[in-house]
Amino acid sequence: MDLGLKGKVVVISGAAGIKGSIGETILQSLANEGAIPAIIDRNARGFGYAEELQKKGIDASFFQTDVTDPQQIKKAMDGIIEKYGRIDAVINNVGVNDGVGLDASYEEFMNSLKLNMVSYFLIVKHALPQLIASKGNILNIGSKVALTGQGRTSGYAAAKGGVLGLTREWAVDLIKYGIRSNAIIIAESWTPAYDNWIKTLENGAEKLKAIVKKIPLENRMTTPQEIADTCLFVISERSSHTTGQFITVDGGYVHLDRSLLTE
Image (cartoon, rainbow, N blue to C red; front, top):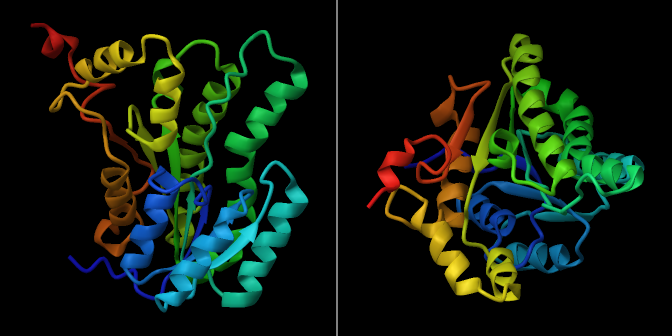
């Protein structure tokens, strides 16, 4: 299916994760559809990703940015606008489950909010004139933690709850411009970071088996590619009448009846 993303300028934050991460997989999927990715991330590996895509004829750009710094976000967005003169979609993908719990300091809690939620607000704020001009759309990457809680991660849970609130608020606020705003909610996805975390646990193999057993559909984790495919569909015109939605890509982990899991 042609998603009609060829030549569309898509701002994507948090896309310079290691190969196989959700952000990097979305990035490669955008490039495969012929979109023009404008990458915002603090990790310098983004320069390499942009260069790889440029060699394939994709006009990708990387803007190294600490998204906890409002001035750096503004500089990056100004650079994107100066280079391309338009923005067709924003994918806010930053997310670090940083373990900032009730024992954390005020500063640690606020930094978690800045990273995991405030960066979303600032990127959209600076992209808004271009989104209005293009009748573009916004996609926020959320987490099940916003709905279920997790324990020992107050900052991340609060931020991701806020992201869902912003998603609906923007859908209402921007409907007069024809701008759509949606969120993807992720639960258990097999990424390199998840693999690394499991390996730090003394009983990692058993823990992984217990988690996978609780995923109703096929008893397996969601792949980053499955998440990326859904993201691209949602930002495309193939999803042109979808706004204000929380789309959960999780094999039924969050919403389906627990009785499915009984043996």
